[in-house]
Image 1 (tube, rainbow, N blue to C red):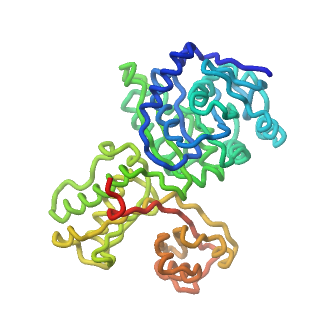
Image 2 (cartoon, rainbow, N blue to C red):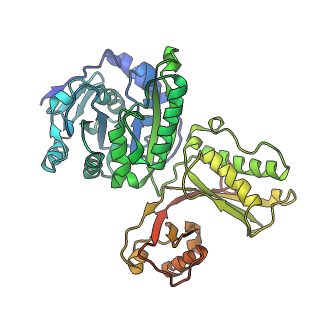
Image 3 (cartoon, helix red, strand yellow):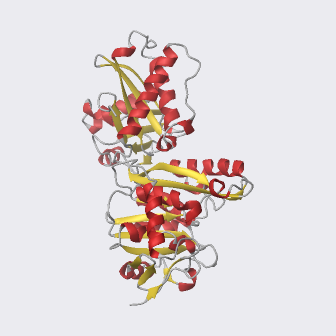
Length: 452
């Protein structure tokens, strides 16, 4: 059985097993329990552990399950080549012990024309090696598929991801963020990168945003990635360690969760509900301060996401306003929509101070909307999942939205779609070849359920 050693042991991370184990444990210890859900992919930083280890720790610490296989996608930093490459060896030998390479998966990728064997692509590549100690410490029995991306279309990376996707597989997208900008410039650039990642804007991601942009694009374009939603775990840069703010490298940590899972823990949910109620209370009292600075909330709530805020009083609807497209931090979106539900829903007068004590708040955090492919109305209905899918209908310059909760009162798909048309200001029998339907899922919770 052939083995490949870690060239960067002793430079990017300790070569001594005891020291390395202690450092990995310390970086994992910096992670907090952001979610009970199981992410399908993580973005993990890959610089020297002194600089980026804590961000990698946040990413790996978010994985609450034990994968049987870990696919690591890294950019090629020093060796120019075309395509996607895996090494010829059977085992990656790390200071913490061996990791078996999934040779069956590698052969499958070769036969599919998606990747090829090239040791030179791995001989001097830290983007793979820096991930291995974390994987070995957490899941010593897992097989790995180490893939270095050279000059390759993002669509090929996406196809490769889908060829390897399975319930037992975790994808590690190895990447740092901006490189060698001033700290102020880096923060601006990295904020843009976070926006693109969290909105799923694969086409706009470039190497100037993240050195591992090919892997990030591939994930966002893949069917596996399309079925997930992003949660921000942490962001920072090298100046925190070096003190040099003139030339920094940016780092970030994200986890991608299935769209039908709850990715926010009770603490985050309680914080959002408090933000919503406090915003409404301040507005009713005519306070000047309404929107919190996103960086003052938990990092997870700085994720760009869309939300709906629904208010009820004695079991009756009292206001509902929301966003469909993520365009600001979740905390900010909830605050603005809470104020809107209390003061701008045209169906109701503004909420009064006497109503506040008995008013209940329900929040819905939306996943990215996915376009439904169909050729006629019947086919469109067959592709909708009652009870789970929220729908957005766009046609003739009009748009309507129904949340999944509406299925409780409209369980029939035909009636649901007809109501959606009416809400968009269209006739029940309206149909057009240019009509667009998008589906989304929501994570819903109320102040009657969350007490953390």
